[in-house]
Length: 168
Image (cartoon, rainbow, N blue to C red; front, top):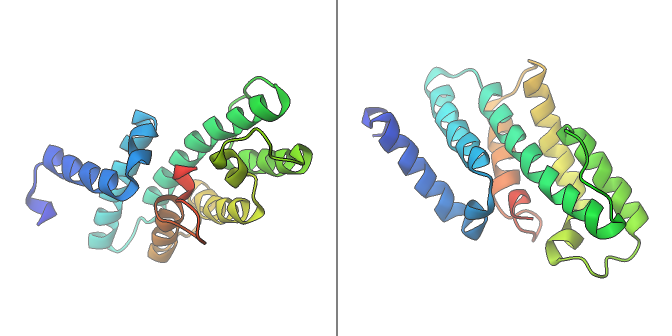
């Protein structure tokens, strides 16, 4: 039972599970993003036991999405427009930037497969869904267990015949 493990053993177990779930994507994530995902899982387990506090794991997932999407948007800015990286941006602002890039890019020639997927409307809609949950969490609004399960699925599991959002 996880509750009897040392904190280090619990973190190692969760890390191994996330690595198995995400495959090669796990090693491509920033170390702090890996850490945030581990803590989101730990907080989820605590929320499960207590029956409350679900906004905290949602914030961990949202922070990870924001950090990792920033790298992807900066890649697209450079590849599509030859622009330098943007400033610190929220997840919502990054999604808005993706919409702008998709509209302005026209052809996606020269982009990696991941770059093309990022500009697809269905991908952007899934990011918007995760942002809606994350935003509610950041603003202290109600976040349910179902919301946390959904944001976790959006970020970590294949969606709509696409890679997990964090894998793009």
